[in-house]
Length: 297
Image 1 (cartoon, rainbow, N blue to C red):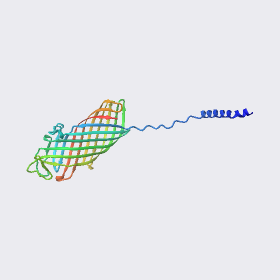
Image 2: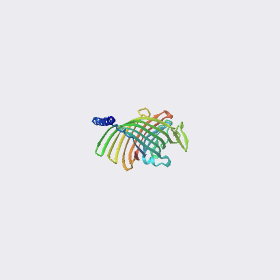
Image 3: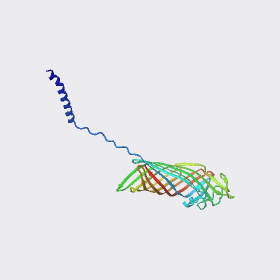
Image 4: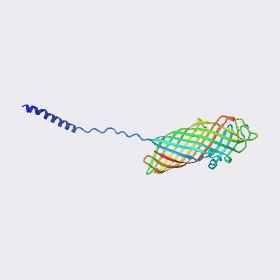
């Protein structure tokens, strides 16, 4: 009797355990939890480049206007090599359809001889036809972009982007004019047998909006065309830019894709402030080939 009583709890435990397992086996499997897609990763491209510009237009410093039509070889053929200098670079960070774009260019260049001549009549009297102009400029762009559409067919792919932002300008210009009897010297500095008209630091910011078309011909070759307009009287009266370039991939590492870039860039601005002998005006088209290297991470 005591043995039976002693065995009952053990038998009951075995029955309860087996029953629980059988009950659990009869329950339907729980559905898997929700699968959240991983957020898109940021990609970055950096492009140091060089710009070989020609200058077409006019600039007015201290009320004295100089016409400039300097070809690329005239800009490059400077008597003092240190007067020709430039640093340029662009970057782009993208995440899905959104992108952040930037460009920075510093240039120190000039035009003289056949590339620059004074314009008469002037605000202070006639001046000699020969003139020379030296520019120092910083042009900085920042914009936000959005991919409007993308179409793919085999290895080729086409995308259209819209972007908007601002373009910052800083200039310091010195015009060297020939001395004549009719030249009003108000606001000018005499030096080295010339009359120097110096602008001092001039800055402004242009709002801008534009479109960019990108097309990939193959996994290693792609082309981009972009254009924008700006100014609208907020900074300059009006400005525009057009650019096109081709990237050719020549090397690839685990994390970086390297491409050679060649293209053409044209940038125009019409800015004015002041009047009389305080008039400063920059009405200029800067255009020429660009060469660089693109690194994509």
